[in-house]
Length: 274
Image (spheres, rainbow, N blue to C red):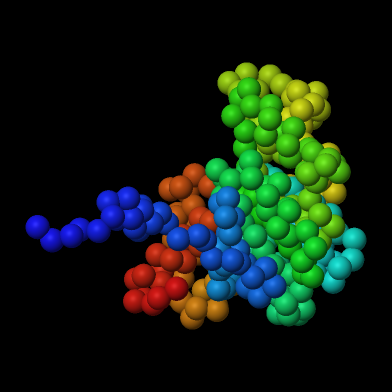
């Protein structure tokens, strides 16, 4: 019988093969964007529509782009809460604003999107970013808290209001939510006052913690058609206004998302790749 070597050594070698290699060290100074899920990974490019194609949200666009540009330049800038109707471009506007600012001020700003399950590890992210010679917009998309969750809102307030684990000076938060107060819907909410301060426990009414709280509302018919026209002009697609309106009626809404879905349908019929 041949010598199989030291059993303990063979076991050690086998265990080493099972252990995942340590995550690669991320260079926070180079990539345009990152994803944080408890660890960081870089993203080669930000996918976003050009700013001029985001129609029907001109006031919101002006506020967000100006604030992002200030952050990139190292000037005083706000944390942002973008709230309101689904499909009206909250996330797209944030990505497009960062991409446009990166074109204007190369290398100064990066976008970091935080995975929903990684919210509790934001303090570790802030530690990693503190002292980096670059500015960062930390993006939390479609934020909401389960009923009865008090630790999440408390942590968010602490990060915004200067707690011991608050975000560093080179970081600002951008949060999107379908509701201003970032709370779950209740069956009785139709009887509640509109003002969330009157209807929601203070620990959940977080809008006042953001320097900019920007509402998004369902677009008008004219805005909906203007969105489609902008995309179709850029993509050289023929379209019919009546069909576009019928498309929105079948979906029960007019929004930037519904407009883009109609454009996708047109592009598919024309054999084009978006």
